[in-house]
Amino acid sequence: MDSKRPDRRRFLKGGAALAGSLTLGAVKPALGQTPESGQFIKGTDEMIAYGDRSRFVTSKRMPHPPGGRESPDGFGLVFHVAAPLQDSVGMITPSSLHFVGTTRGSYIPDIDPTEHRLMIHGMVDRPLTFTMEDLKRLPSVTRPHFIECAGNRSRPQHKSVQESHGMTSCAEWTGVLLSVLLKEAGVKDSAPWIVAEGAEEVKGASSIPMAKAMDDCMVAYGMNGEALRPQQGFPVRLLVPGFEGIFHSKYLRRIKAVDRYYMTYSDYGHLNREPERAALGYQIGPKSVITFPSGGQQLPGKGFYQISGLAWSGGGAVSKVEVSTDGGRRWMDAEIKGTAYRMAHTRFGLTWNWDGKETELLSRCTDELGQVQPARAQVAEFFNARAGSGFSVPGQDNSIQPWRIASDGAVHNAIT
Image (tube, rainbow, N blue to C red; front, side):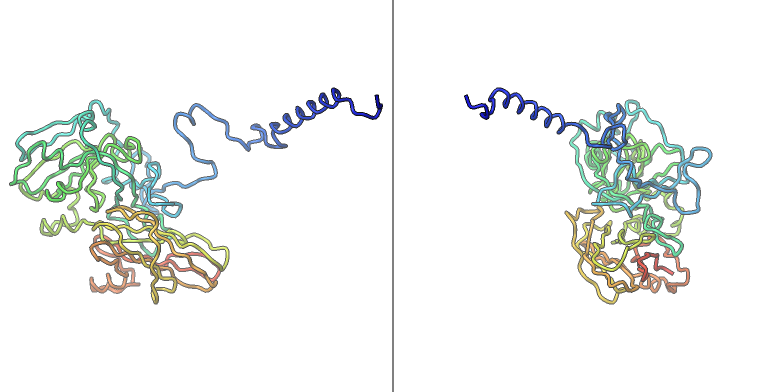
């Protein structure tokens, strides 16, 4: 036998050893990639039970207004808390970042859902009391809707979009249409209004036209695919799409059908208004705001950027959003991202090539009713005031928010 001929057995044995070493090398973590190095996230029981976000994501809510009452205060009372719109993507606000509105501050009720009851009474044929189990046995609907506090407005001292517009959020709500409950109770034709009341420490009862109650109002027990959070009214709240936040009663416990408009806590600033004007005046007008670039942010230099923002209206779906990159001299149609749902936040975007010069960015919303978001100067003219003189918009403020881009890329509130 030729002594130079390779030994087949020795060759196979060596090959197996080589393959084994390659296999072991493939599964061995690279240098510095062991769990102990901190570059892996170890699972925990808490993480499995309810997931955590990345430690690199730091979005958080803040007490509102800036410089006002802390939330919670020294007694544990919760006041207004604003959502970080500057960090938002899409159109849904995570439940944990949804804004919080309270009536003069209150403790959050700790309600056992098995003990909670919702009563429908007043001018009805059959007064009814529903348990949570009763409500969940009825046909449900799931819809995205925004909620906005009437105090959501921009002022010259607001430095970020969280400060100027953070008292609005949009979630996917699940529950029973209020009309189902009212029909079951047999509402009388002579009852043109309802009064809704929650179990808050400071009662936030609201008068709502029966036509609205029978149209699209919802008794909601679900939010973004899970039960309501306590700060959002657990175990059940009222959704009044398009109306300002105080109508969306939390911890809903009774709805009374009545024959007239009742003055409630929400009417403290409108005691001299006619009932019909007072109620319908609470519908949110067409509104939009650019969330990037917005106040407090920094552009690294000239070049292409994706302007992004949110638009919404209490009058229905957003039909168009326009953006101006030159202080309002010219307007361009922005792209509507996804579906524009009725009374829901709608994401918009526009590609922009910044030349590095100082300018102002603005957005303008038009809804399906043809209502157009007004400029601040238009609102001031309507109220015989002068914009730029510390003018504060009476009532609800849906005026256009301008952001000034400085030549160094810094973004500032352009309201004066």
